[in-house]
Length: 174
Image 1 (cartoon, rainbow, N blue to C red):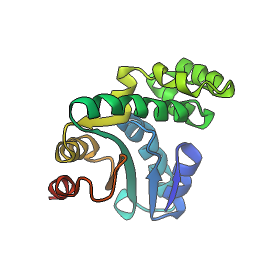
Image 2: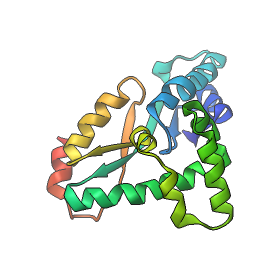
Image 3: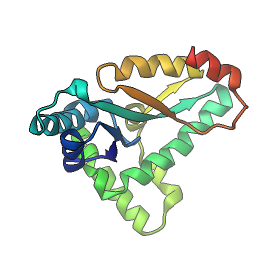
């Protein structure tokens, strides 16, 4: 397995690897319209099929109720803004028509304006890059629907304190 974002690493993964770890900064549209076709090209080069290969994704997940859930998007926006400021992820932003936001974020990053960057992540961007739910079980249900046919393995990219929500994690797993 290798990880990556753009055409060359996706193609290489399809050509020589057993699987690919998509970066958490992705959208399902990007997976379906870019990542998977690039992987398919690599698979074709090696004479293999999609059934010979696993796609793994980590999904930015916002879970909680009331105040907890209101705070999480602010922190998640900052994290998304950090990734979106990186030129390597520009192909993802371009697919959605957000390249100007990427350029603005890069400029803020070069000036060390980290706290201002999250404000440029729109509600639409947040919806494309995250799954938001009141419980882990609800998030898992949404993720299963959203990633059906796109990913073989999914991990939740969410902050947690070991032991703090064990009953909720057990319900989500069930």
